[in-house]
Length: 144
Image (tube, rainbow, N blue to C red; front, side, top):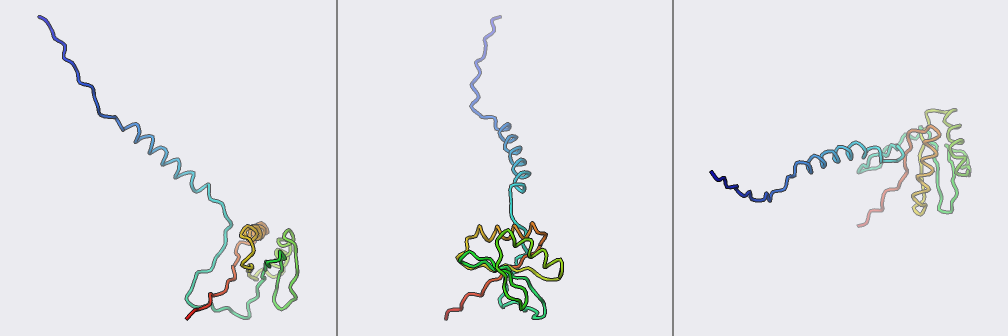
């Protein structure tokens, strides 16, 4: 008996199962590491409303104001605004809040102040133990 060997045709199909496994592993790695890459300052930003928020006039605030000329001012109640350097902001505001912990901290910055400077001041406030910072804005002018 003579046996003839059958010729096999080459398989032209690609096995994609290993590629799917690799893709799922990478997806899991990105899902786990993505939240760790986000950096920022925790800020309680007020919700946007159709009308201005009602503010209790009896409530007192500490307002950190950043002017376009580079000066930082701290306003508290009816007192004269105090000019401070950026490194002094944390100590000044923390000292005021130690004496009066119910005060709210608000940040007001001129439109031309660089965003990086605003974030640096907010970071200093957070380092000083201030968890909630409100941002003061003005409503846009209504055009008819």
